[in-house]
Amino acid sequence: MTALFDLNDPALAADRFGYYRRLRETEPVHRSPFGYWVLSRYDDVDALLRAPGASSNFPADPGWAMIRGGPTCPVVKSTSKWMLMQDGLAHRRMRRLIARVFTPRNIDRMRPRIAEVVGRLIDDMGDGEVDLISDLALPMPILVVGELLGIPEQDRAKCRDWTDKVGYVIDPGVTPARRIAMNKAEPEFRAYLLDLMAQRRGNDPEHDLLSVLMSPDADGEQLTDEEIVANILLIFNAGHETTVNLIANGMLALLQQPAALRALRADPGLMGTAVEELSRFDPPVQLAARIVTADTRIGDKVIPAGDTVIVLFDAAGRDPDRYPDPDRLDLARTEPKSLAFSSGPHYCVGAVLGKLEASTVFAELLRRYSDIELASQDLRWHSHFNLRGLTELRLNLKR
Ligand code: HEM
Image (cartoon, rainbow, N blue to C red; front, top):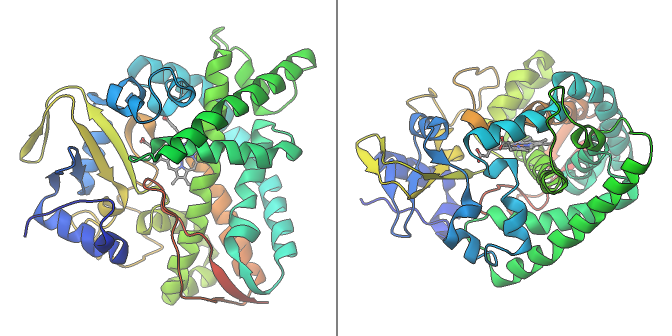
């Protein structure tokens, strides 16, 4: 059988892990008729993400820019300043300045506040039938990332709306309606944030992280205003879309594998490895892409310079060469590291925060409810290509 990878194939939606298994077994380094390459083995995905010649600079690619509105349109100008889209030295400089926000100390400081937010949202959710996503998994990370960045509470809903619209920019296919919406949303967000930054400058610096990003580091290096706006947009979006999926996909996996759920109830000490394993089992982000800048050998094939390569996190996470019994959810599994947060220089800068948020939610749900069941088997998934998330997760909760 010839492998064929098509993101729109109904067979992929019907049985994704079976589809990926067939792809991995028949053509793990797959040249798609749509013009890109697709990697599905753990080692190949990891190698590509670490390769020095693997570029993330999509905004510089004329074809990529054109279907998003052209090189001078708002979203292409913004993404050209995202840390996620930088390579080499430019990436290292930006990452160093932005990672100041995500130090273990800063994240640890948020621990009690995250627990408080989760506790309050669960109080409001109550018991009986609930939608875990709209009641808890979505509002929690928006609140947390909003507070982390110092975005006033009353403005967070509109920030979410703007950044959600722009977030579609990294999908491989951008429809005309989405292109128009994202190019309208970006300037609105930009105007809002520049105004907020001007207010901050006029006052004593606050202790939020927008103020940290606006200040020079110990070497006097500083982000420009345009870089701050672009990366706050990125962080606001990356900080909630992914976390909601980690929580909801993870909860669904636990409910579908009751033995694992019982093990976690019996031993809350499993939580650290459990969250990593849940990210492997059903990753919140399905794929990432790179452009290779030099001929690159992967397995028995050479990918020519200039070609685009898609790496599939969910296929790599079920690779039996790296994970014994890959379709089993084993909450004590420690090796190898889940690729769900990427690998190499772009490894998720918010991973510690995202995992802390998810483990706080799982721990508190298990502590408060003696029985958690799926209230509906009718599971619907968002149409995002790169993200994998449910539109709702209806549960029956008993105290
Ligand atoms: C909780 C689940 C999360 C998952 C599964 C996840 C996944 C990822 C992945 C796969 C990448 C790299 C993409 C690539 O290699 O092209 C990434 C990068 C990034 N993530 Fe996350 N993320 C999560 C949470 C967060 C949070 C909570 C934040 C911030 C508040 C965040 C901010 C970022 C940023 C800024 C980058 C770019 C890093 C760079 O380019 O150096 N993420 N994330």
